[in-house]
Length: 606
Figure 1 (cartoon, one colour):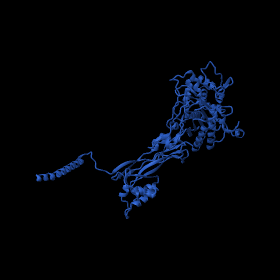
Figure 2 (tube, rainbow, N blue to C red):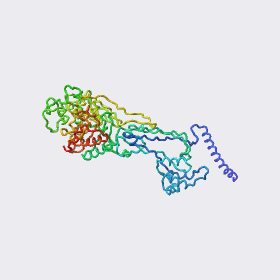
Figure 3 (cartoon, rainbow, N blue to C red):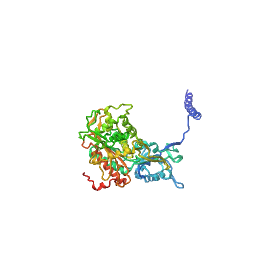
Figure 4 (cartoon, one colour):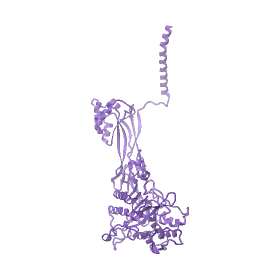
């Protein structure tokens, strides 16, 4: 019995060992014949991000607004540093602490700190401890390609720099953590700016870390294209500063402005407040993110009266002109529910020129009623209302302009539309309409991008001075600007907008704020606007001059009040801001006065 027990004890481990051998053998055979089982590989392929393109002002490369700076994120792997042999040809292997000293010197870190990281006992999260960030290419090349360093992992990164902080924020926009455009030019031209990523083919060690000197067949990334804007930075700075201080001075909740070239419709400046910090875009409120210059619909008020008069004179020049007279009584049985004139007492009759200068709702309301919805609507469309202008920024709104052929305008709307009620517009549409008036009736497409240049230096897109079409005749345009000249004088509603030595063809707007849902208007709350063309383009510098000085810039300023204030009228708030911005713009563009004789005799206190 003893012998049998000894045999059993002998054969049990033999049988178990034989079973293990058979099992392992079976797995090895299956590994060789199973097509789904692959052999271990240390080859890898990964994407290398491209540098995002830069954004420049109208001054080109001399004045960048946004750029991306490549940098590298370095981490220390103490185990790899200890186990990897680093040596130069013909030299003995480098000691561990000599490598630590090199890492500390290259990354400008305290040697003792790196030494402590290497000597620390293993613990959870011990591998790949962060060392530093650096944009120095020499440091990168030394760590990657020299035989001086080991145990350093590297991640390729890039940081987006907005070189002027909050300035230009609504124009430039922002990028998210993945460097995808989130607003402004960054969003609109994300495809052009982002470039094409490269590819790295290389090898990694058993721990999965890249062996940098084993890289091969790398496809270099193609950097993104550069965007050049039409924005004049000095004008933009002045416009932002003046608008912001004006909002504070007059107690407005928000405000926006546009400076546009009359001949080309290039945007020279655009500002909207409240604003935001581009690098903190994700933490900002919708109120801050909203670019009110293009993405906000509002009833424009009396700035629209010049469009109504233009429609009348252009559609029927034999009937309507600067001296066409209307009765100023509101209780006229020929018209339905005319708007009032705020208690103003006028003469019994008033010309259309006087109606613009004094901003008579009654007279322009009667004119609008007489024109009829179809005629007025057709001209409003010619001026660009009810459609996007096509400016190269995301979020632009269409405005709200009901088509009378689809939705009948009621009797009250027939008079209200002509004075800037019943429909909604955007600031860029209003500025475009005044650009059309200043450009002898030809509407140009507003643009803010000058050209786009790819990484090879080739211009892949160039803004053309695109004419959208003629809205009114040359004659109508020039007559209208002459009718607007006295608005910014002591005779008109914007005497505080007057600029010494320059003629201004402008118009005020004081629009009551609508209650959302079409429930009427807030009592005492307004949006104040002034829009002007300067010089007007209809005044000669002297009697013997062959032609008037050209109209050069359109400037629009709007303030939005959320509380009652005595500055709610366009002439005594937005008109003042217009004047300040215009004076700086005229100086920066070296535009000479078209009324030089006025400079000596003009009294600021008049």
